[in-house]
Length: 362
Length: 127
View: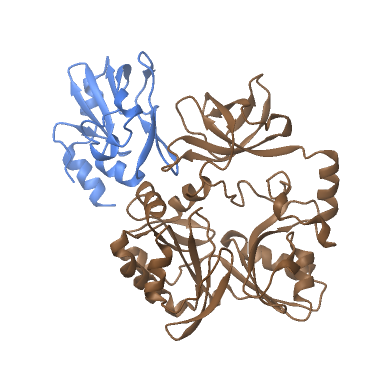
């Protein structure tokens, strides 16, 4: 498969980025350094190229009905200009992908999907769509840039002075450099921030304008490395780690975006049964007490040496400054304070289940 | 980049300084730059024995853990304890204060067989 580049690839090279291969794209993993970039986002602002993500448009007379059947959250609760976090579930209640749904009108929605699942999600939705609604993959028509951090709004307003007031999970359609763009108050870092969808031809202009406008605030371009440490601190899940086709949405802690009362949707029956029988596994946060770092795939043991699960994500994070992570474990072991052991290479590290999230913005 | 002339080097970007039958090991400036900001170093225990090429130490960034291979055979006589609190020393001072492990009972012939500073520089520049 050929490697894909976003419209900002040359900009990343100019900024001295180190690259990695992600979902078929060559993406910046870091510029000045993961820790530096992470701290900049929490202290002032960071700029992310997220153009690799997918954008699907669901439109037509039954767009709302279609989405309500195909996703877990209640689409009827959206209004024009509002968005919500949701999941595409399979019949077993597992997560095909986690998504954000944006309502333009009752007959037009944008669904933002993970880069790694773009094609899979599109094909899934097409295969399960039995409504008078059309589903189009418009990913090639959108570049996406995220600005995240406490100074995001000031920096963005310098570039877009006519941006209307936006509350969290709301979005506006604006004219940017003479073309239509969507600015949403959403993000994946746990800080205030915006995600901007715009024509690929304008991506470089916006990227440079935001870096220039943000210079006096100490804005940094941020790669996938810090994107991961940033999302882990507020415990945002990542598909392929905390979420997957064979982990139920209830096990992953997505119960809050599964609306059983909204009517029929794919995965409803399986999850209802699971809720009634007792959800067998749970996602927990842990701090490691011995010296070491646990990572995705490391086995988790109870303190009586039984295998109880595995680490879904783990690292030592720059703001919380501890070796920590998330693990999927047997539900009996999910109580805060539970002592566990993590198998890291051939060592066992003592750890304990802690309250989540690890970080909340002030 | 500056590579001390009295050190020897490996193609896996480790350096060795020989002092009689003792040697000090670390990773090079090139390696620390490739790895990024180091947040944790897993060091061996004093008394552990290693052969040339064994994984002797693990250096970790937020993103990944990387093995450091022993450039020589020997027994660990000392580890750099400061790295527990200041792992970033490996980034800022890879060739001196950020040393990793000291070995004793090393073989001078094994040391001589490693790359010189010039050979190592050629290797990096050809990358």
